[in-house]
Length: 92
Image (cartoon, rainbow, N blue to C red; front, side):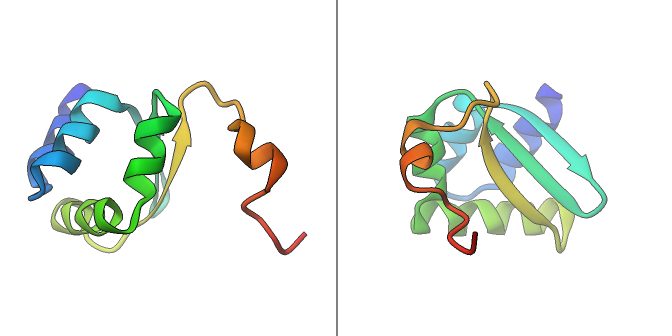
């Protein structure tokens, strides 16, 4: 698994985003054409979700995996406190 994380980090051209991936991504889980990226901490998770980091992350994944969808989640599997108050799925 560490090899896949390092491969993704090396494909990212932004040094900051690459460092976030190498330091805080703990697992990559592939299902069909979808990638779930597990992050160890809420701070880096929100940084990777930011518009700038998201763009760099997409470019790196495009280089390695081609067209793939992805999502970022906390490694603990717990819902972040902010999401408990304001769910991301506003359609419910």
